[in-house]
Length: 305
Image 1 (cartoon, helix red, strand yellow):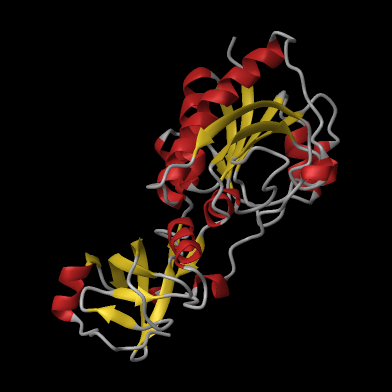
Image 2: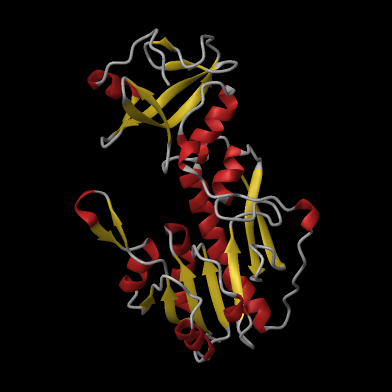
C-alpha cells in the first residue's frame, strides 16, 4: 500500500532515496536547505534535491529554520505517518519529533554507533576503515543516537574515494528504506538501541583539514586525498598557487618532506612518498600529471607547502 510521506534531504546522496520513494509511495512535500549564493555574480544555486524534486513535480519547502509554529503546524496537520530524512543538514526540533503518530526515520551513512554526525563517509575513508555501511534509524533529539532497525555493511575498497563510496551507500540506503517501511507496516520491525560505549563522531570537515601536511605518513595523506575527493579536495601551495590533488598513490621513493623527488610529481612525506596522478589548479580543469606539467612548471627539487 502506498504511504503518504514527507521527505527531507539536500545533497546528491539523497536523490536515489527520493526517486524510489516517489515511485512507490506518495510524497506530500520535499524539504531541503535554502538556495545559496556562490562565487562571482552571486548566482543563486538550488540544492541537488531541490532540483530533483522540481523535476519530479513535487512541492518543495526550504525554510531557514524548522523551529517555528508555521512548520510545526504543517507537520502536525499533514496527516502523514513517516518523515524520511536523508542528509538534510539541520537538526530536527524536539517539538516536531514529539508529534503523535509521526515517525521520523533517518538513512545514515555509517554503521552506528560509529561515525555519528555530519561527515561519516569522509571520516570512514580518512580513518582508513575497511568497511562502513548504512543504518536505518529512528530520529531522537540527540544527534544520530536513535535506535536502528536495519544495518548493511559495505566494504571500502582500495580505489574508493568520497564520491564513489557515497554513490554506493546512497543506492543501498534507497533500497533499505523501502524494506524498512514495509517491515514497519507489517509490524515486523525491531528497533535496537545503540551502545553508547562505542559511539564515535564524524565532525564536519573544516577548511583547514584540506591543506596537505607533508609531515604525515604517505598512507595518511593518501587516505585524506581519497576521503576529500573530489570535494573539497586536499591542496598544497606552489609559488603562491593553490593546487588540489584528486588522485595519488604511495611511492617507495624517499626524500625530504614536501620535496618534489621526481619530475613526474613524486613528493616526499614523513616516511615514503606519494605520486600525484590527478590535480587541479584553482579555477582550472582537472588534469593528469603529464597534461598538468605541460602547462605549469613544477620541477624536481621544488619544495611544496
